[in-house]
Length: 111
Figure 1 (cartoon, rainbow, N blue to C red):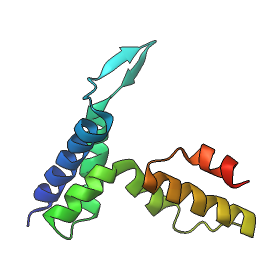
Figure 2: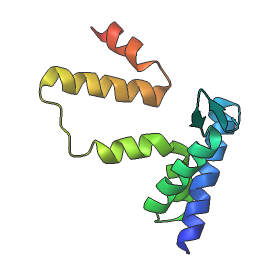
Figure 3: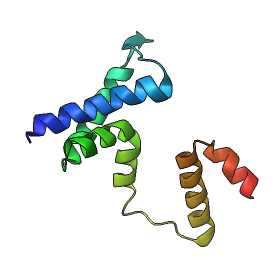
Figure 4: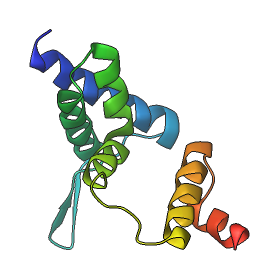
């Protein structure tokens, strides 16, 4: 497949996330001299994630759906928690995010 196919799949995944999870598509806007890209920014992030995950259309779509989380996991691969407490907190936050629970609340409950 063409790299453009993966780029498009990632953008579609990000758009699907905005519609299914956030239940809205936010238009770009300018506030106080700053440009906020809204859903367009998410689609660009998703498109790049899809391009990087270029194994199949479905994988690119899912990378786009996860967009920001995809990049956060790529950037954090080399970082390891320095102690057991940080590791447990990282695991709790990850599980909470996967289950759709507020990570901060999950950490407070676990303590």
